[in-house]
Image (cartoon, rainbow, N blue to C red):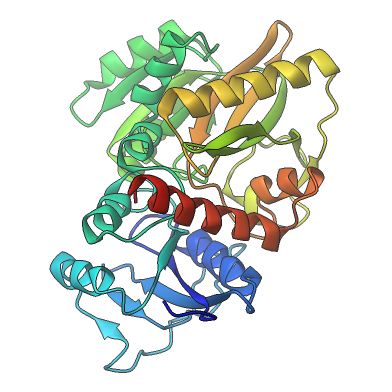
Length: 358
């Protein structure tokens, strides 16, 4: 890159997971937030079929209706091979980007897969590395690591397609009703439900298995739902952001609709909890971030119960939509959205320059 040239930032969005549409919204927001004096944004759209399109900006999907417009047909020059080899060759050549901003959510984007592709290509990328991403994506594995680190977690049991129905019900009975059934490796609350009794258990487990291959039956904890973003890691000091309190409208929980429909929930930053609870949640969020070795950013979700905060899970690629929680916490800390995007890009470049850990 010559003197005075802008840094090319390839923003990856879309993907093959159930969070395809959310990812597009995140990616487009990131593209629009890049400082045009410093950066040249390059949209990279990953289709549901696994195809890659460089330089193609997909239309904005409707998260409320779940309908995604058909992306514009890319030119022959912009359409890249769907093979991993073709993608690696193009990224390795640095013809499109000096750094990759990963805005892919869910399996294929948040689980270490795309991070491994970037690392093999030798191109810097935002966020956590391969191992931290893979660990965080698997709620069962990450939960065991968090428990070993001393982080309070909800009790759980696992089930998959091979688990006999009677055994599913036995495990659920040990956890107790109501309980939460969710996929072990998915995000945005896809396949997640609150189950009130035995009659609803097997259908809920089937839904979560369809979403991600296996299912977690987790203790339902009444309390205040809180989320805490964390920035930094690696070469940078780790900083916990102000907490956000999540209050879904009505009797529902913080499901996909509540997350991405305007007015479906109230998000209050800073959260309405006392100073001791705030400090404890922020401490636990940093501990979780460091336990997995996260870099760039993460967001951890908690329930503040009558006996204190209990962690639910950690996300290594939080949403970057208009209603997403990490940008809200950053704004409360005085970091606007363009500043947040800039910080994540600079972090990736600095880490690669200093350690060759790209």
